[in-house]
Picture 1 (cartoon, rainbow, N blue to C red):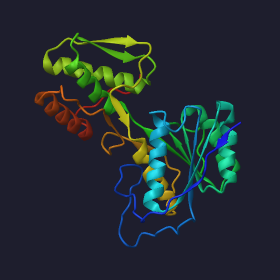
Picture 2 (tube, rainbow, N blue to C red; picture 1 turned 135 degrees about the horizontal axis):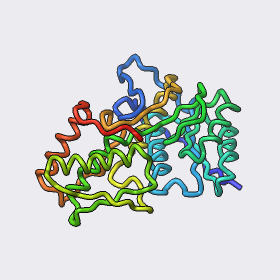
Picture 3 (cartoon, rainbow, N blue to C red; picture 1 turned 135 degrees about the vertical axis):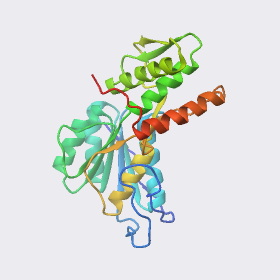
Picture 4 (cartoon, one colour; picture 1 turned 90 degrees about the horizontal axis):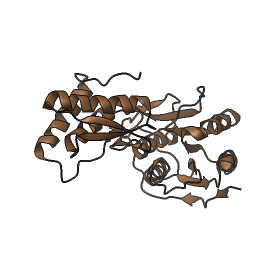
Length: 276
């Protein structure tokens, strides 16, 4: 059985979300329409990992709450106790008159697509996954990690004390290729010989997907009547992805190198290899 969380009514001063990095941030002038309080309800489903999982669910939820606070809209949420309850949790939010429902992850893409097809008047945001086919009321929020992974690989190579860095086998191919290329770039520019070792348990350490900012912006678009089903692709250039901030152990040389390399990646003068 799923648990339907209490619905919240957030009454805060209206502030547009065009300043947040994310999909289609638009103008913030006085001509932009302001939603009527209570007329739009943005909702989210979390799976059994919960809304405070330290990952994409938590970031998406943070973005939803921030958008609700900024835009003076209603929010709702439901948590599925098991993967088999995810579809019914979506249905519970649709039944609660949600205008938009946020779901997270490829494992829930099929349930989200079915719900979008069954409920064409409800908008859906699918975080970090691509639906099998496009729907006019379903927007994927995707994140291109290739450039950020390249930068993360360079940083890892610069900071390893052993001459070896670990690369998770479970990461997507563009990330693996970008990370390994970043290590190679460090070796070429610094005359080093850092090796990449496979880590069966590793994930996408060293990079961040700015899920919260993407959700804030996409919810804002929908609340203002500007929803688009066109996929959003977060990149290093638009701030949709980034590396984890350097800690205090990073020296001035590495900090300068990172900013120089970041600019080169954004400009396209340095390009990570394509997948494959």
